[in-house]
Length: 54
Image (cartoon, rainbow, N blue to C red; front, side, top):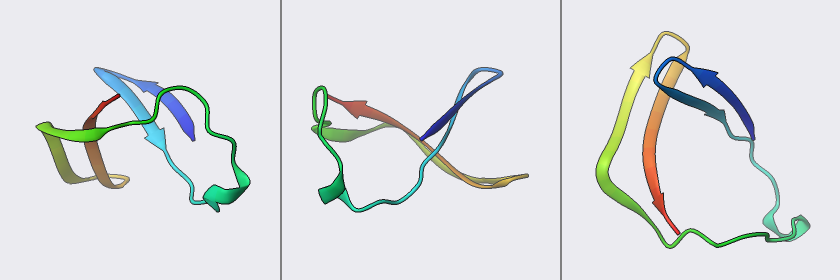
């Protein structure tokens, strides 16, 4: 994951990997809330904004 500060928030760039090769740390997310869920196309490609419930 790459995090970059942007005006009004943070940009996160996620990469795929085999989950069996990773060690879990911290609280596991329980759900993605529908409140504030956004999908849209921007100048650099598609974007998604979510709130995770842990």
